[in-house]
Image 1 (cartoon, helix red, strand yellow):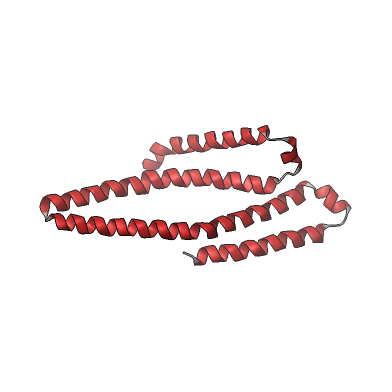
Image 2 (cartoon, rainbow, N blue to C red; image 1 turned 135 degrees about the vertical axis):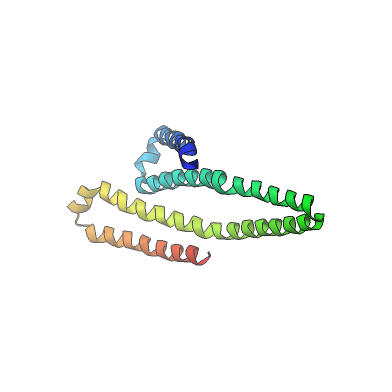
Amino acid sequence: LREILFSKVTQSAVREIALQVFRHLHALSLRFHLDRQTGGMSRDIERGTRGIQSLISYSLYSILPTLVEMSLVIGFFVVRYDIWFAAITTCALVGYIVFTIVVTEWRTHFRRKMNELDSRANQKAIDSLLNFETVKYFGNEEYEAHRYDENLRTYRTAAIRSQNSL
């Protein structure tokens, strides 16, 4: 039911931001487009729109209901039991929140590096395919495959590091 209610809002927000990014890309200089990094850019746009969907989803379906539930439980402890139960519960929740934020911040650089390498690998693949005729004309298929494999190899290392940080 909640998906039905909020899917329109979520998809409208994603659409609006994707359109703003698209317009921004068309407003960039010719130099930017001559140095085109189409593959990396398309991957970043896709990742950004998925991130917006996740953020809205987590906010509406996880964080907000959890905050309401915590407030109700703490209120119940204050009314039915001694205030110390509410204080201990609040301290435990604050400790958990602080721990979660610290660990998330620590993990962010692993994830950011992984995303950067993923974009670079995708950029090499897409740009090579966009220039298919030139690659074919000069017989550089193996060279392009080697460059792409190098990027995939570094991405793999970063992805493993990011996953292990969980």
